[in-house]
Length: 237
Ligand SMILES: Nc1ncnc2c1ncn2[C@@H]1O[C@H](COP(=O)(O)OP(=O)(O)OP(=O)(O)O)[C@@H](O)[C@H]1O
Ligand SMILES: Nc1ccn([C@@H]2O[C@H](COP(=O)(O)O)[C@@H](O)[C@H]2O)c(=O)n1
Image (tube, rainbow, N blue to C red; front, side):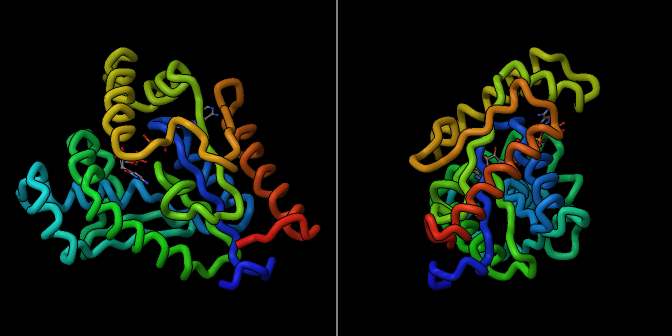
């Protein structure tokens, strides 16, 4: 890509804390825009799943790094046909299990894992058959796609995130859900900063917005960037 052709692929980068709505809102925005959708957290989760499934020691960085060449990961980027596979195993549901969620930080903290997965994400972005792709995670606006057409930090108050997550989980109290969100954000924040918008990143705060309004807010940020690009105000990449 030469950085001057406005017909080139549009990349929408979205970061945010746990439970801020990254997956659901990104998927909704991708559908509305006719774009692909890439869930990068699924790759970190799938790697943690593979280690645990094989009985490997995810606490040992050498073991985790040695497993990377074996990590045969596939993900559906059509927002209407989402799936996650490791080799022949469909792990779409399994990677959301609490035992994976609590261990994923062990792989996400390792620079070798991050650079391996970043390269994988960039290949996926480059090969999308759609005119654009919405990519969500923790370091998309800063590391994976710092040159994205639109860069968004999706936030919501801790209280709103806790209530929304509690509504999804049966048999867990709001206090437990809140502590899980806080603990994950604490661990992840040691590795990347997704709490503060980097230069040029637009914050979308969904605390007072419903789901549909949040999707629209994201679509508006993208539409504005595309309008500016076609007006020649700046170059899309
Ligand atoms: N603006 C909103 N209003 C109400 N509910 C919302 C809103 N945005 C997201 N949600 C709901 O909040 C919950 C958490 O959203 P989602 O799973 O997309 O967050 P996430 O940031 O991807 O979380 P995680 O980082 O833990 O994977 C979901 O039930 C989603 O439908
Ligand atoms: N770009 C990213 C995305 C995710 N992670 C790590 O994966 C965990 C799971 O992510 P979800 O979005 O599915 O919640 C997350 O807690 C991070 O540890 C990451 O490091 N970078």
